[in-house]
Image 1: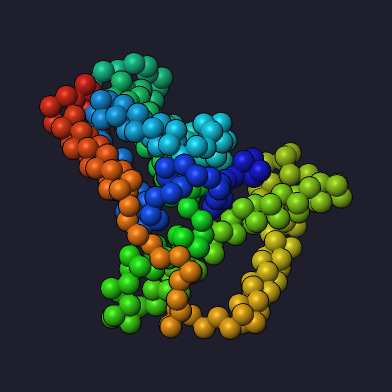
Image 2: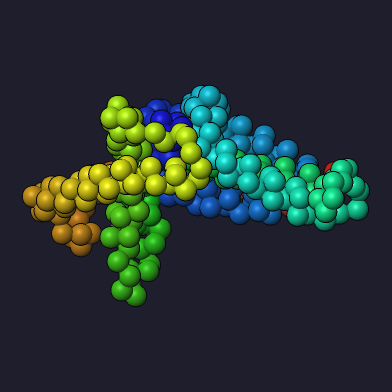
Length: 274
């Protein structure tokens, strides 16, 4: 499952989303996340699904890659579904066993919460992570939050730290998988036993993983010092960001999405979920 973890990866390309200004993508991604929580009816979720599918098509990234990125969320989705299925009230009873009762409203709520998680993962990664290089993302965060630097906040440092953390997530997953394979080759068993036994079996993985990450952090700091990195003060950018026509057109499309979700919630509530 770790090999399917694609969070933090960047897929080079020349699609519409790849060529968009990273600042606009950051803003639109935030608006998209807000709209996921604003949607309250089946019709609004259908519109969100159609928009997400359109963004995936515009990114040039295969749907299979997106589905693989959702595999690590399986247990979270399962837990969320069960929690909302059995602990949500309603009026229409579908099934009763002892104190456990499943309502039709609980089924819709469970589906809606699971769909929210999948849309959050798929949409945000496609719009922002998969189509934006770490350098462009750092520049976008730094420029958008530049006004906060006037009150003394280290905006450049924050942007650099967050981008580097996202950049090394795939590397961390790869090293974890290598350590697991090495421990299995030495006879370690991670699949049998109860939950406590499996947790104890992870100790031989965590210790070398932490040591490797501290060593990598030290090497990275040394490399940055050797390149005379002293923060964002006085630094220039090789690429200057500019808003283009495609950025405004995409912003218009997201504005239409926002208006559509609000209108569907009010005037066309096929079935109000939340």
